[in-house]
Length: 436
Image 1 (cartoon, rainbow, N blue to C red):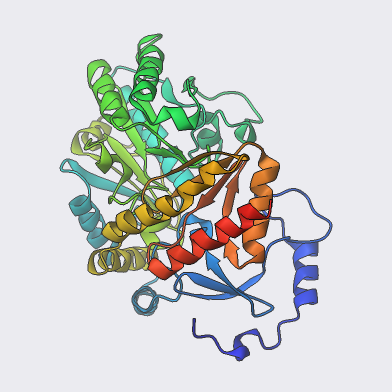
Image 2 (image 1 turned 45 degrees about the horizontal axis):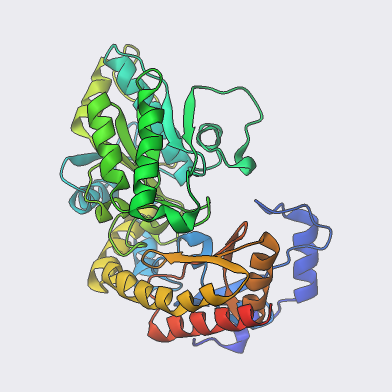
């Protein structure tokens, strides 16, 4: 990693942390009196980052799980700069700009046939809000109102009000009344047993009961891999079961690809592993490589056309000031080029296999209950959250940043990582575990 000492010149570590402690409210974090516990970062290049002290780390968190192309990628920087000089943005409710049409067309080429109409927003949470609004309005526009949504209890779809309402995770508990009915399907088996034929049968039965018991749902809304819910790999074929259930009941199948999309699981989209086509798909994170806030929701022409019957404006009553931001669109186009030219999806599949193989021996440790993975997502599940916290701390002390979800430790490196990076990641996690 080619850094100069000058990048940290003038950075006062003590002053930086004092400023952070006094003025920054960190999301998803306990209230602290001593400031941020983690590193205060200054720069990044490739799959490594550097903090205010000049220390480097292998980033196995991919920033916020969105740094697909790594840091300081010249193609992404050039795309952003070029578009900034031309036109930063324009209100898409009254006009358009060149990058938005181009990125929508590219998305239609990446997604299965039939998914060709895209709405652009700023975050995965906003994409969830839009998806639920579209699903409900679609049925209202057809004169057949439906409200209920079926989803995973351990699913996560964002932190706006509607997104939190979908989840059964305790950290997502609502602070007000429920805006619409949600049926949440719990896991009938531990994660280690879930990705088996028995796990598929158990989940099939649970979802059939959830969908068929009660009024017909407006939609079934799930992630292809439960990310915040513990990095849980679902049984092969589950999405095909859900597609069939939706076809039988008329419910829309909404798949949340915010985390899985754009190569993370070793396929372009997580649902590609099961070969299904959803009615709506939400996307964010890797779509712009973490360089700019950007998200999208793509649906079918049938769903889009139903909005002509809207009695007020004859269209969608939803949007954001910077939705489809021109610079973000330009960066997304560059991301698509990098994914294709560097074959990062194929690389994620191959390197993910090496990563999982390297971590599987951890199963012999008495404090580890499961090791699982899909593409460049690897999860080491501990018996206790305290063990997971110690494992993450031990790896950070050795220069590797990992993500923790309760008792689960997740390795989610940028897709541009190489064999040496994977070997280092496996070695450091092994050392950190040996210290427990």
